[in-house]
Length: 486
Length: 138
Image (cartoon, rainbow over all chains, first blue to last red; front, side, top):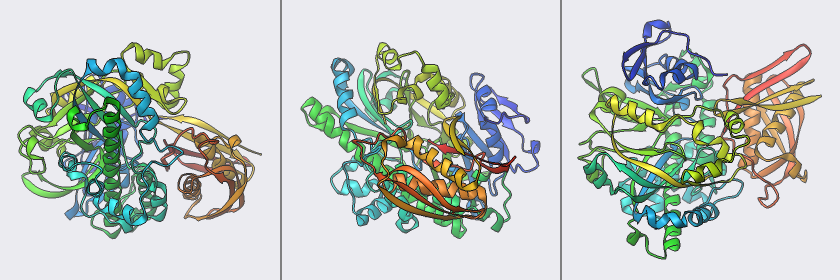
């Protein structure tokens, strides 16, 4: 099904490949794929490389159409795609450059709980998570927000729910953009989107979303790990989810609203799913205002989930959260478009940076980082798969220079859901994971099969590539102990 | 005659329907979408909703119609038993969907669907038969 890349692809170095601008008449810039020998074949055959070239045709794109090493096929833009457009020179914003799950992201909470203390009770803990952490699939979550409150969530994100006592000020400080994008407009969000999100704030959802118990298996950068409170042998909790039905509907609404924009602005597109409009046009501004509102909803969603998680852990251990050392390490968005200032060819330019399946990775000293991380760089949270490992990295000057301050977001899928189910036939994934020391529970009948470790690239290859390319530094490796899938 | 099946697509899933008429094609796609989310055999046709959708071409109409069906299920929490298309042409559709309010104790949600996409979208009339293909973001 995926379109194999047939064009010219030349190696730049051991970790980067170039699709030259000249290889297609409609490309405005080069395409650059970050991949090592272990990963490049999948980028070529899996359809991602074709999409990197397609994105290079967008008006106003600067430097290059980029793809991170966890590249795989997506709608319009590939997953792992990074594209920056110059908003002052007609640069476009594309809903397909953010994706349907706006501000899908990852939140990590560290603890003082030793892994050996929790391991004998892992089954009990996972059963409790499975029973009580709201999934919101088919049923609403425990939180109900009246329309006025929903409007405030869309405008203020995590800040609003924290102001209601559902989190701490430290949670806000340790969240990308403090859990709130300015310029969100609740009126730009359709009634249908409100309806789909009404009882889903504070729910995990389904698909590849999860809550995972992990332990710090290895520390590579002691000062950075110390700043984040990550200590070898201690437990951490990772949550991966996004903006639920509200975000999906916002994306759908604006792809529809922008269907006529390419003709209006004289833009020719190689794929209908890439619909876009100049970021400064009425259509572009409206989408950005709605996208920010959905991003704020996603941050409030993860905030509520972490609040629930703390409550469950307090009950489980019979001790207050503070005594368990439950503190948020960070929260990153990996499906988002942001207006940021970057230096391009020696000049500061205001860019619309699309990160779709890519994580912001700002370097040490960046003004947007909380004081605790100013000297080490932004924490980057990379979920792997539920059998192998996840990583904590930091942002670098290299990322700022090469990729508009961006890096990978995960392992990247290699098997379709049906192929994964077929591969699991006759096997017991739950038992296999248990043998590897991971207690897993999934809501759907095929959830564990679809999300089995083999459905993903090896996160080690992906992380090695971004580290070798200078986009990130390794801080710690986290090993899964227990997971629930929505 | 109408028929709908699912097919594999990268991380997601597609719907492919064949039908004698355009109305039946949209019915098959709508019921196929409902089936992916919540198997229809669990659902009784107790209530009805009317959907009216217009779009610039047949393919856009398919996406908009199926998005409206998705909205009834997810936004209104209404489980679907059947889709009946009253009228469809190249730019508009009027349909009645029947079912009942979603009850988690009786209706098992198999999976969530994020959206109906435009990727490799196809609605064609070939050899006296209608064919529709859409890919769902799961």
